[in-house]
Length: 146
Image (tube, rainbow, N blue to C red):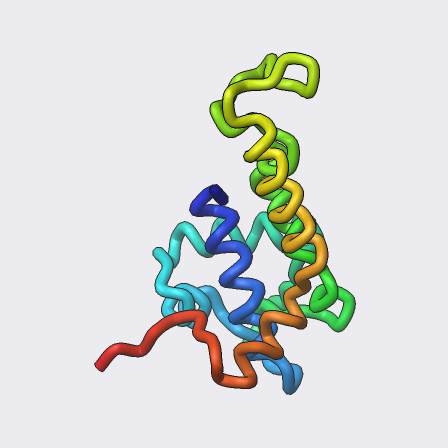
């Protein structure tokens, strides 16, 4: 449902938030390895998130990416809208442009409920909440299979 870019962006934000709690900064290589993504691709995503003020970046020997307290309270919906637009929140399940309440597609009513539930989930979930869940160690961001 989400683009690969959006998935990587969310995973990167969670990883960076998790690793920078004590004021440290994280480099592109660490993020790519930490979320199991291609380094070049995640580098472009991190640059875009910095431009869109979803993330902070500091240059220099002690530089890297980090999140402010305010960034931790960004909802997943905000991130999804920045990368994938709002199609997931109001688009047709079959991709029909003319689908609406007046002209519904065969899946309209069922998908509308799913879409509304997904919107509620993404709007009510923040990066901070996901980092807290990871700290409790009952969920994972990347499996370390040995």
